[in-house]
Image (cartoon, rainbow, N blue to C red):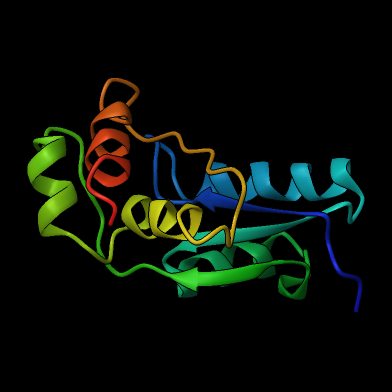
Length: 125
């Protein structure tokens, strides 16, 4: 198996049309990067696998990390980030700190993404 130069964590549960739209984006990204980077899909594993199967795309092209909590639009970002440790965005940030991944794209509420960034990175040991 090829060792990838870069690992990209992708929050699959952010955005109005997630995870259908984000899985479609992950497929396009995989085709574009041509195995130069590994995509790690973070979200509801069963839904992600179901969408990949429906679209006829092999799930073994991705690592999938299950997140069983979803932060909904309208939730207070700081409170939700603290109260939902198993959300895709929180798990995604946790992969950045130990250098498991280098990038975390997300379609999470645009005005809210800086809140968990500050909370997570300024409170690290």
